[in-house]
Length: 76
Image 1: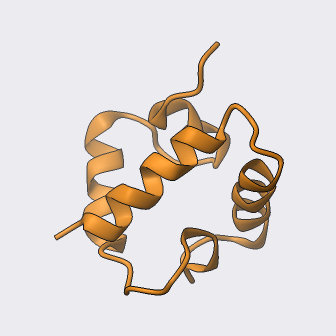
Image 2: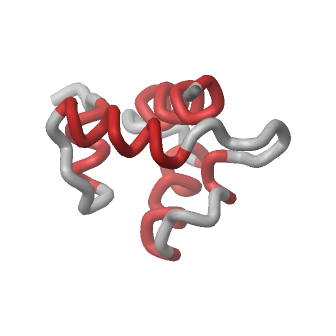
């Protein structure tokens, strides 16, 4: 199965319906310029570790993690 934002949120233990994803992005974004997604202070250690590992190994999750990164840096 190809990962999606919804399945990424499920993997992170977060509510994964579209309204919850939108609310998360609205409440946590925009991230300041220069702050990496994996370094944001709202992740638990486990969540940050998962995100970092997925990007590091360029896993199937990496494009979705990148998508979340863009959303959180563009959020208004």
